[in-house]
Image (cartoon, one colour):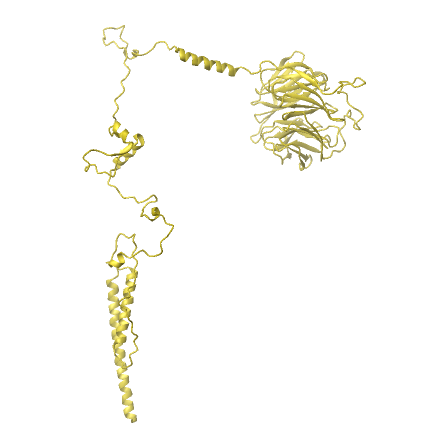
Amino acid sequence: MSSKSQAGLNSCLQISRLECFNRQSDIYSKTRINLIFINRTFTRLTFSFLSKLLRFVCITCINHLLTRNLVPQPSITPTFSGCEDVQAGFHLDPSLKEVDFNPSYETMFAPELGPVNPFRTQQMAAPRNTLSGFAEPAHINDFMFEQQRRTFHTYGYALDPTVDRSEVPGGDTYIGSVEEAEKNQGLTVFESGKKKIEKRKKLKDSNPANIEGFQGPWAKFVDEKDVAKPSEEEQKELDEIIAKRQKKGKHEDDKPAEEKTVLHVKDMYDYQGRSYLHIPQDLGVNLRSSEPPEKCYLPKKQMHIWTGHTKGVSAIRLFPRSGHLLLSCSMDCKIKLWEVYNDRRCLRTFIGHSKAVRDICFNNEGTQFLSAAYDRYLKLWDTETGKCLVKFTNRKVPYCVKFNPDEDKQSLFVAGMSDKKIVQWDIRSGEVVQEYDRHLGAVNTITFVDENRRFVSTSDDKSLRVWEWDIPVDFKYIAEPSMHSMPAVTLSPNGKWLACQSMDNQILIFGAQNRFRLNKKKIFKGHMVAGYACQVDFSPDMSYVASGDADGKLNIWDWKTTKLYSRIKAHDKVCISAIWHPHETSKVITCGWDGQIKLWD
């Protein structure tokens, strides 16, 4: 083939290729126009259906282009068998109420997609539009609905809403209490079927000419009784009620209990004729000394347990000055006298109260002591013989009792009572000689201060009052909104401070001279006493402060730093009192509601 003929053939092939390319571009432009037209026509179709339609059109166009023999080339189009059997699946939501296209029969009745939940109950699978189920709107008036609802709640029945009243010729059908509906003839709450109650008739003279007999609106009723006298049965009931009230008003124990005493040692006197009141001198400790020990130490171990009380111990008191005897009162109505040294025996038991003994107090010499109990009696006892010398009462419960510490006033004592008064008695006459009535609650403690010229009292009214002796008006009244009741108060050995057990689990220190200010730097915390009158005490050298607590523990603080130094588990129940021996460096005596008295050293 010559070069000219080869050049002509190449030019023909280029022309044919250009014509083929132009034809293809025309086809593609027409296809694009068709696609734009389809898009504008089916804009309201759903997205999934439109995408499938576009995919089907694109596949058709491409197949059409490939099947056209525009260029002489071997046929490389793949054969696709069974395209008529392939159908694009479309899921129709069964909860839809409206469809904006015409789905096929297969699409409408196709099974729901996904596996069946084996744990789904029939109730869960049921169609519902509320939390409780499927509610269909009923054509009922709001007034009718409220009428039937109130009737059902009042009478127990209502019209059956599922029955059309126009179609039932026999009458209305009810749900609920059908018998009640028949009894009331189907009346609703807005319909009154009961007859009005007839008013009581009055005795009226209708003749206005009878001036004396005409009573007008002041006429009596026909069945009215003039005398309101109780019948025999009513009179019996009234008599029973009056008898019960009289019994409640009476005091159960008008008569005081019989006093007796029990001596627990063989001989009351020793070979020299001395009783147990004699202060021993062979102990290695000078019990007659008036000076405190130079240095005190913390107690660490239990030395002895005094047992004998069958119920909780209320209070303990050491013998004045020497402390060689211990007096205890208990809820078992008994008072016991114990030895502190030697064999530590129980010397004598004083029996004479019918109820729990609340407080005890020695006189200055220790030869006599007073006891206050819940049987409303205060009794004066002889410590040596055990005899009850005098009884005092004003029909109120005494909560605390104190002798006047002055030597010339040993015949006078004061007692804080449950009726908010402080009563002063004279032992010689047995009569009340003074009353201090200013507190607003029961009086809990009485403490003498300022060389016994004054005394401090605390009460359930959460106040502290200072009194001059024999003057029934308090000259100092301390009460703050933050203060709590202080049912236990102790004077320090040097007479300068008052330690008050506060019910907010603190020990507060007040000055006992002049102004009675609260010492805010001396507040002892760390124990739980709320609700219990746990007695506080100082060590003789003023180094430590000791107190029991509600958990039965003995707590000891340092006086200077107010730090809690020691905590000992002393009793199984409340440790109600802790006293430091005035002549010993580390001996502390505790008592608790477990009925035991313990010595620690």
